[in-house]
Image (cartoon, rainbow, N blue to C red; front, side, top):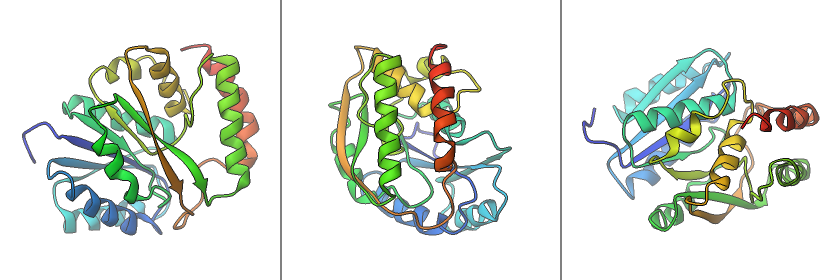
Length: 236
């Protein structure tokens, strides 16, 4: 393992994504190698019931030590992201980048994030084009309105998985998020937005159709999750 702190620490939660994992990991490895050799790709198997872990283990045999695997009992997508961010901070990585494992995060936009990393402390992908359906777009708009009304912050896309963050100062924010906070990435976006010292950047991206598998949160659950979010925001 590279003893130097990684320049980039990529975090990818995965739950029942055996159909998409190989393509996602290989295309992202190729993209990252265009910009730095000193990176870690952390894949977190969040208690998958399919062959997600087996696919990851075979990929590690092919790709080597830069692909790291952490498997644990299911705790949800948001808490898996936080686990990855914590590990990036512990390894003293300079930057942590998060994607999802379903193929919706297109690597073609990454260079814009990496190019502008010194201008900002956090850069979010803004999903201006989406292939995952109107109802998902509506859910994001509702989330934006809820955050403005209840938390007093205006986040362009608080739950987007495509985000690059500096690790300096990030651990303190992560520590303020309760362990039962379901939409942890939303909570983190709120905390970063409230801090005037954090410089926020945006890169316009297209969100592609999933390669396979099913979303971790069904559309029918969004109403209940919105109510839960409002309650949990009061604890931040």
